[in-house]
Every structure is written in C-alpha cells, then in structure tokens.
Image (tube, rainbow, N blue to C red; front, side):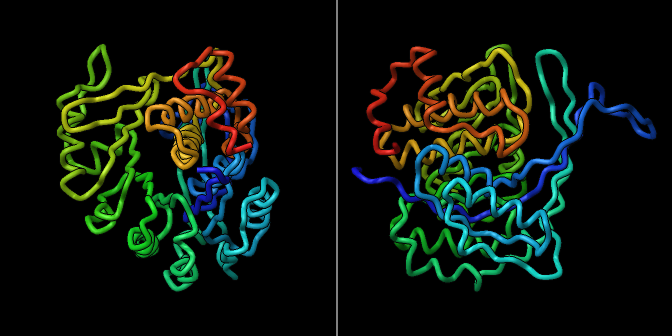
Length: 332
C-alpha cells in the first residue's frame, strides 16, 4: 500500500466524568477523593482519534446530543483531523456520559465505569445508509457495541459485500449476535469478554491464560464465522489463537500506570492502523502494544492517546526490531 490508509469508525461518543480516589467506598460509605476532571471519550470516538493520531485518514459516524458535551466531543475529533461531517446531532437527547471512579495507588490504577448511553443508542440504520455506496473506499471498518446492533449489522454487511475487512471490538461484553459475527474479519475481545460472549471459562495459572481454554473459546467463535480471534490479556499482553498454535504478544510495561481507561481502544485503533498500513499481523500487534503502553501511563481517555511520533520513539527506546520502522512511512 502506497497511500494513507482510510478507516471508517462507527461507534459511540461519551464524556467521561472522572473521580480519583485512593480507596473505593463500600456500600453506604463516603470517602474523600483526590481529584476530579472530565475527558472526552467513548469507545468509537477513542478508536477514531487513536487512528487519526497515528496517521490514518479517519471518518467517524455516531450520534451526540445537542448539548455542551456533544459539542466538545465532536470538536476534539475534528481538531485532530477526523472527518465528523456524518456525526448526527440529536435534539432533546443528552450526549453519552461515562461515570468513572479511578482507584489509584503508587504503582497501579483500577477503574470502575458506569456508562449512560444517551444519544448513542438513538443512531439509526437510515442515518448511516450513506456509507453503503462509499464503504468500498475504506481499508478497514471498526465497530464496537455501544451503538444499536442493527446499525453495526448493516455496516458490517455492506463492508463484507464490498470486500472491506471489519474489526469488531465486542465491548461492553454481551451476548453476541450470530449474524454480526459471521461478518467479522477480526474480533478483539479482552479475556472477560471472550469468556462471557462464548459462555466458556477462561482459567488462569502462573503463566497466564490456559491454552486449552483459549483454543475452545476461539473454536466457538470460528464456528460463528469469525476469521481472526485476537484476545487482549491486560498485563499478560495479547494472544492470536489459531487452529494449531497460540501466538503470544507480550505486554509493554511502563514505569508508571496512571489510568487504564482507554487502553483497549488505543490497542484496537493502533492494530487497525498497523494492519492497513501493511504490517504483518505480528508486527501490527507489537505496534498496538507499544501504543497502548503509552496510553496507560497518562490520565483520561482521549488526552492519553499517543501520536505516531511518540509510538515510534518508544519502539526505538525499547529497541524493538520486529519490523523495519520505515514501514510506517506511509503514515507520516
């Protein structure tokens, strides 16, 4: 490929309202927090912004309310060059909001998130129908589960018909639709989502997830028509499960973990950019791991997402030699 990759993202916009504390309160208990701030996010918007910051040509489809949060969410993407001309602004409906409680210690951070979908759940198939005739101009379509299922299903079907690969990040975890799965090229659940969506256990030992469990989960997803199963494993990295092998991509650890809120979205966005830029699957996964590592070292969702220059700098700092960095020139 000798041009900038084009990526279409269909998904959510969510304004994160974040309270940081050293201790999560128990039932009926009040504790003092350390700080409060707001940060634009939403799985779809996060992934779109990460793709754009890594050099892709990105179009975002979604829905916001006609409120200040909606204005801020769309403007944040537009500032980084994302095409937001097809974002629907819904009158009389609030934009999506994420209530994030972040429990921090000296070396780690754990989050608990409640999402109020708002306008995200009002997006209709008719409002995204424009893409049917243009979807063939994109190199990848990214989907998540924070907009209505009929929208995802329609876009995935149009992409499949046009020969465009579809990457589905099945979050938040839910029972997956068999028709949607049959249209998916890359499925990228985390370990909890992989287990929940298949109804199969994923056990762990001192070496990480059990290989036999990973194989059974992947087999269940393959039987639904998914072509590639890539499971993210937090601190254990990620795993590409194939019929006869499991390929592990190690986690890239940083000295300080500030906020894991957008780590998965950063990983998925970078993976899609790496693949559409022509990297091998293994190289694209390593690229994604380095990108997500920078994300968890910073606060907030969108504010934490790194640029291509920052990711290349980390690859050089860690002396990564899995691919020639000149392969990323198409993104610069």
